Each structure stands twice: as structure tokens, then as C-alpha cells.
Length: 263
Image (cartoon, rainbow, N blue to C red):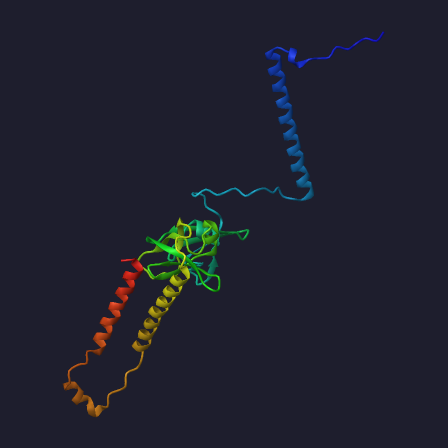
């Protein structure tokens, strides 16, 4: 007749014994994990490989070793003080809501990584506009009759579509070509966005044309006055056409400034 071996039942242990066993098992697991990690590190060292891992996010107060370049954001890239152009990640520019004129600091690390930091934001103003798109697929925000270009990354980030009413951020006190999307106000608020885009583009083109005409006229060399006529013209009243032209230019610039400021 065979002897029956009694089975152990952990549930029969008293609470103190059970806690001691759990603690012992935890210590065994931790010890095993440390042993495995140590073995992996030794293996990597013997194979001549470096330990890899996800790079740690730097804190705002931390400094990074590398080449430092400062510059100004122009809506797409950074124009460095060294005369070179540096690409600015569109995602960073969109999420940070960078606008033209912002002063940036670029740190190029020893591994070639570009790290940007905004160190001198320009004064901003807010406005509302309608999202539009031209025949080439470029996106614009028409605000107060003027089209502002926007980054494709901003359109993707906010999931904006032509016809949406959006809030934008633009630099104050300067004639900018680019805007940053701040938020979507109303989806599909305007269905006739194509007409608005065409009108705004045409008006903007006309405004730039008269500026170029004035610039060209201002550099034209006047016809020399013959010496025999100098005494004659000296007695004539001075023409006021130049004064009128200057006044007209000032009026047009004032009108444009009011349009851009939404007055």
C-alpha cells in the first residue's frame, strides 16, 4: 500500500507567514531583474556597443553644449545673424505660434540636432479670418481683406479646412505676409471662400503695384535744366507736384495701415 504525500496549501498559512513569503518573492524578482540588467550591460560592453534609449526631454533651465546661432523668424525659416538661413520645423513653429519677427536662438548640438528656443517674441495682435486655398494648394487666411499665408503643419494640426472661421496671431506694427493659427472658431462658416480669396489677392496685388510704381518714380533722374534757363526758372514759383505726391503716398500708406489693423 503506497503512502500518500500531503499537498501543501498556501491558503492555510497565517497572514504573517503569507506576507513574509510575498516579500521574499518580491526580493527574488528584483534581484533577478538587476542580474539580467547587469548581464545585458556587460554584453553590450563586450560587443563594443553603447546603451541606447529614448533621449531625455530637456528642462527650460538646462543648457546644451553646441554651436549657438541667433536669428529672426520670417514665417518659414530663421534668418541668422551670420547671414545664413536655418530651417525651422513646421510643427514647432505651428505649436509655438511663431510669427514674423520673433527672435530665436538655435543650438546645433554635437550630434547635429537642431534645438530652437524663442528668446524675443515680437508684439502681437489677434484677428479673425476665413481659411482659403489657391489653385496651387497653398493655404491662406483672409483677414480684413488681406491674405496671410499659413504653414501646412498648422492646417493639419488644427484640422482646418477652406471656409472655416479661424482666430489668427500676427505681428503688430509691421506688414507681415504670414500668420499663425490660434484656434478654429467655426467650421464651414463661409461657403464663398474662393471669391473672398480672389478679391483679397487682387487687392493685395494692386497695393503692391502702386508701391512699386512710387519706388520707381522716386529714383528717376530728373532732366537737367539748361544753364540759360536757370535765372528764368528761379523767378517762377516752385512746383507743388512733388509735395502732392508725397502727401498722396502718406494717405495711401495710412489707408493700408488701417486695413491691416482692422479699423
